[in-house]
Length: 466
Image (cartoon, rainbow, N blue to C red):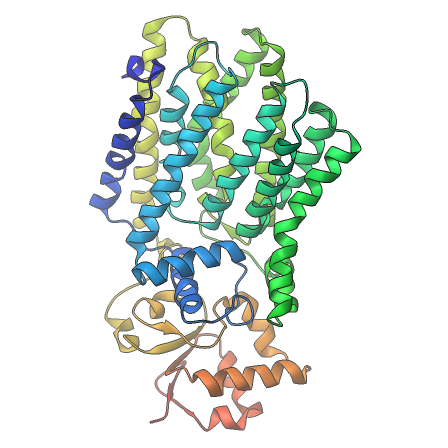
């Protein structure tokens, strides 16, 4: 198996595709959950397809380009988690292929090999979270493309204007998919000054190209009279509200222990054992900066969950392969490869199995069952964290993200906000309002028109009067 991927032959990609499918089989056998963020993305896609604008018509911090992607998927396939998983698999295959071609093109290792491709694919199976179509996965694809432009600066003596332009443009597109990826802007600037040797004009060009996608998106929302909502919800709000913890630090430590160990060994193998060419030394410096920036994305995200750490996978791959090829004894090299080949998917599967049997599972996954059947085919608003009511129902009113909507719905000091609340409820009239924290009940005395439409049906839920 090791020798198969060590050969520099594009036919190895057939093996990568085969394992991309095989590694998913155990997840299907034990049952892949629909996790809460996935439910949010499916709802966003449905609302976008129905013509509602992001932020003004859908209250959430999902990036505008990610929301557009989910909307297009809904237009083509409806509310289909399978379509999301298929596109995610295609994106993962592209990332794996692109990084491997990058390492071959710029002579990262002594021998051209497809080991980085299989190692990176294995690391994608450390957690089920990595395999879903998250904004982080979509955004990190463009970070990887920008990373390729940075890599090109390590191998040439003269900086290409086209490369510098693409570097900024890809970084800016990534930002519009997932806001926490803004932390890669300092990477671009620091690398350009310290390692790439950019002059002031080149640095200005890359930063201008970086800001261009964001500026175009801002112009669009200004055109549809949604600029304030875009800036508040996408840039500010999710950094102010309380974050959601779907995965504990102990679980993350279990998931990342093996790649962290191998990457650490690879880093010291570079320092103590291997002699690097100048371009390889620059690549190592770039990886260190990349690691620092990827680690900081987690502090800007409002969900603690595995896919927020996807930016670490190229770093883990780079150092793990360095350590693997530095082992001179074929037997030990083969043993390590098989530990990685068998151990990495085992970590991901065992973590998901543990999570399914953990009492906190439904803080991570979406509930299902007879208790949610009354909302089937109805329009629903859930003012709480239980998204199970949306499984077979559609969202009415923009208030998808409860953490963001709660202070907005509780604010009685803004006449403009109260007018919008009244308009949304009158126009969309959700058939059911699930009022887990009593927010809707507190709101009704201030809105006689809305109060006249609803009646209490059981505890903490309101039904639209017939």
